[in-house]
Figure 1 (cartoon, each protein chain N blue to C red):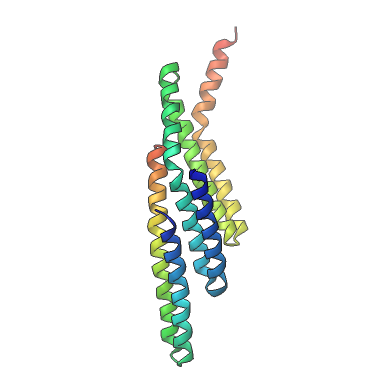
Figure 2 (figure 1 turned 120 degrees about the horizontal axis):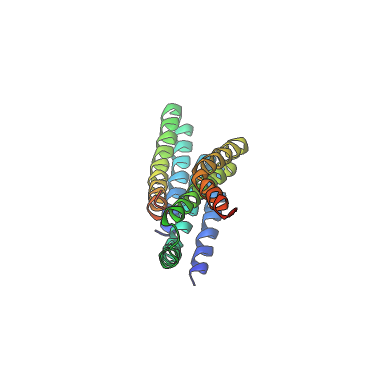
Amino acid sequence: MGVDIIIKIAAVGILTAVVGQILKHTGKDEIAMLTTLAGLVVALMMVLDMISSLFETVKTMFNL
Amino acid sequence: MEIIKIAGVALITCIAALLVKQIKPEIAIFVSICGGIVILFLCVNYLTEILGVFNFVVEKTGLNAKLFNLILKIIGVGYITEFSANICNDSGQSSLSDKILLAGKIIIFSMSIPIIKTIIEIIAGLLP
């Protein structure tokens, strides 16, 4: 629970962008779009379990 | 010295979000959300201590524990509303964040009706 999760997500974003650019330039536009979506989904998954653990903590702490 | 760590995490989040914003704007929002969550987790154990002290005070003074639990619930709901409203504001959806704030206010008001009832009963009891 530190800085690593933030840098991991940023890295996923940059990686998807780079891979998308490369695929676009080699002419494979559909695959580029798919890799962008895949990168987005990966980042979303990481953020989702962070948010779920936050809501779990808030729920247990304030006994909601 | 926890505050220095928190400031460090906040700075790194800002820089990462700015960096990713130019390349891929959608992921920038994820970075800022995760930065906020990490900062919150850093100060969770302080919050549990404070809540422990409050519980101790409530038990000692014989206050109505149900009311205190309700107040805690309201604080929790208020915090989650504010958290999601700020995220919507960050991502540019100001109308969405106003709607979440309105919903949060309505929920908090509906949760605080028992408190209002108790207050009225107490006042009625005081009057001759």
